[in-house]
Length: 377
Image 1 (cartoon, one colour):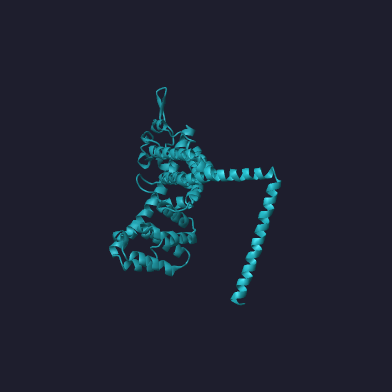
Image 2: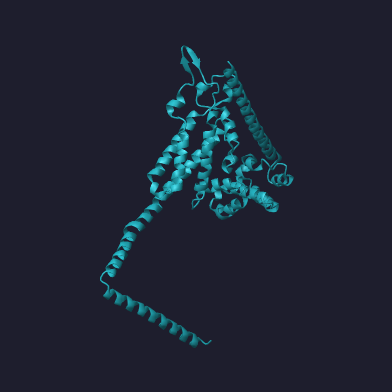
């Protein structure tokens, strides 16, 4: 078809459209002249819509854009406080992270795990009355109080901006508050001596630990897992959310999603490149792509990150030290002493974890015997 013919067809189409529009306008004009009721109603509706858009919807949308991040940050801080709380519950000694962080992130911490973790935790020093177990108990009452008070304060902040929170977020937050208030962990209770004197005789609990709270903590942990799904899916991801989400995806077995997240977001956080490249390598290994796993390890460790300290990466290598090819790659860039330090560190961590579990099982058995002997008496 020639260019002239195309232009002729185009002009004809425009003329047809113009005729239809003119017909509609003429029809509307005739209807408006004949109608004394519907036109004022229509104009009122249009005016109301314009007024709503200008003075309600658009200002509220602008206000939500500014205030919604406050709600999201408070929810994320609540999530972090809960994570620290469960890390405390599973801790083997003061001021050391627990060996169960991967299980906490994965949502795999069981009721029995929590019960075991609480065996060596007590409220205050007055519970250290039994010389047989006093050195095995950790005093955690004030730290639990601090965490619960922070969570309560964060919940109040979200509630003060409830207009910008979803119903799901508000209900979940209220359930969390309810669980942390089941037991009285106020300052007076935390510092109260464990014993009571009646008729000149001292009475103390047979079991000084807070293992009686294991069901409450497990129910709280289930709410933590629900909150994790909410807060780690907010966009855009900042550094902390990126790292928490990456670890959560990996430890819960979602290797493809973890790898996809690192590829799409990792370049924004170059300072943490060693960390996320380690997780990327582990994802490739779990997906059976061993060639890519070894390549990422080689590219990452040839620059000797963390000042050449492989011990700083022991969490990633703890289950891989039997891989001879991996050791060969590391040996290209690290001395035998550095590799030996890594192996020793991993072995020590494993021994400490086994010792913690064994000691807490022994504590549980000791407390059961104490209860049985008291009941028999």
